Image (cartoon, rainbow, N blue to C red; front, side):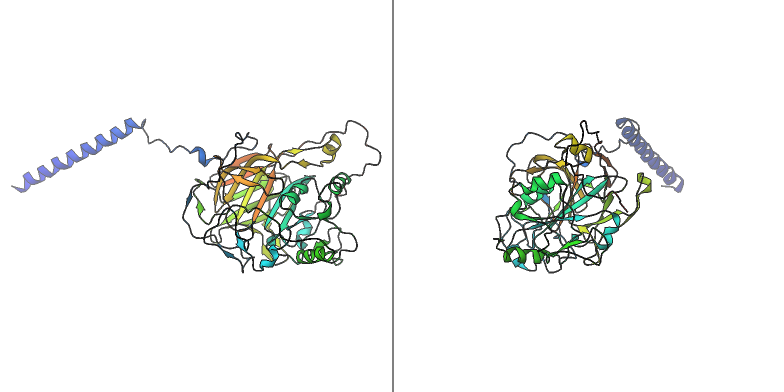
Length: 443
């Protein structure tokens, strides 16, 4: 074959290949409406807004949700002596902390009641002497009034030699004290709340400043502020036994934990919660530690663009506050009377069940919180009502109301709390009424 004929044959072959390629492109074009169709977002990859009614309430399944094998969850740095079991049953062995899934460094700490301590978060200056959050098994944060939030921290597997500043109680604290069968430690309360707690069966387990229980609940007179009560949690255990309390281990239901990473399709690396122009914070996922780092409001912010964050530091050990799990609970915010509404004395009803959002290991899912027993902690269910697992470690529960607005970004979510409007008291203030002692100053 001559060189000219060989060139002609090659040109013909390349021409036929080009025609075939062009035909394939045209076929793909016509089958997809001219352009490839974009991938449709899965329903499971978006979170429903708060306020959605939950499904019917059959008995929850004890079948765990589907999982994928992963490296065991890294331990928080504030529990260096704790260890994790290779697998975690629904009810943990007695040497495990039922609220973290960890083996505490000192197993004797489990031979007592848990301790629920009210820890203030405002005025903002208190964070210069805020102690103990990194030692708590679980922490609940909720709205109190005037744009402010407060913590109630449950200590069990670890102790804090100084936890506080300890501040006033609220109606909501009764739910935490009952669920964890805990001593409730607070300093003062609105007259209505105080009367409610003192007339409840929790009376024996209320731990408030009396003048003769220091130590372990003492003022730090070096702090020139009304926020200067602090608790030594180990000392509280010793004190209650000394005065004759039967402060022994109780039948406590374990939180459900799993060492296996969730296969939830939604990746969320940043969780922002804005309660008000004063109180807002963000959790940022650290993939190296496999924990969420907390950054809190550093200044008042009239709008989102003005928000300024700083690491939330536990002065007890100088460490930033981290969480293995962040769980957002949607809970009705009610008022017992219109007088309570005017003063924003909330009756946050953590009863029955409601919506939840669970964040662990950089993933997120919609869930259901359920309080199926008054004297046991809530448990979490997936949307099919199977038990939903958390990662071993500490958990922060963030309480919002159903009116909260949820915004979802590519790998972030933002919850904007809706503050219920104050209504003018329709009748004159009752004789002898005492307003809440909480100061209004925030900085």
